[in-house]
Amino acid sequence: MAVEIITREDLNEFRHLLINDLREILNAKPVQEKQWLKSPDVRKLLNISPGTLQNLRINGTLPYTKIGSIIYYKQEDINKLLNK
Image 1 (tube, rainbow, N blue to C red):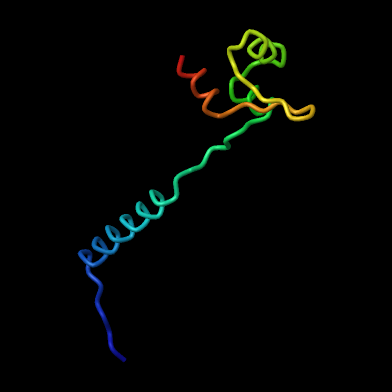
Image 2 (spheres, rainbow, N blue to C red):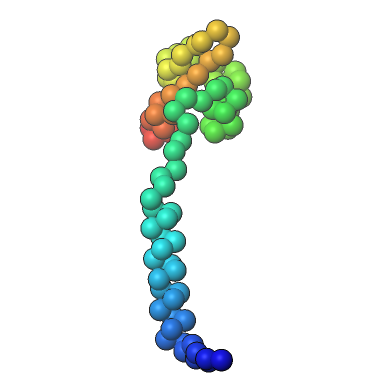
């Protein structure tokens, strides 16, 4: 039976390789945001009431698209609003 001794240097090298591999995996998959959000999601994100969201729609501050009875908002429009 062969015995192999592992040194601290071996463990450090393994740790560095493992960390590098994990960084590559995490950087390879960018987090995708939803392109379109519904009203409840927008209210939760902006921490506002339904009435405030309606006012943002009415005064043109936040563009929207209505399909049937559901109102959708573009994520990029919400980001622009937050950056103002």
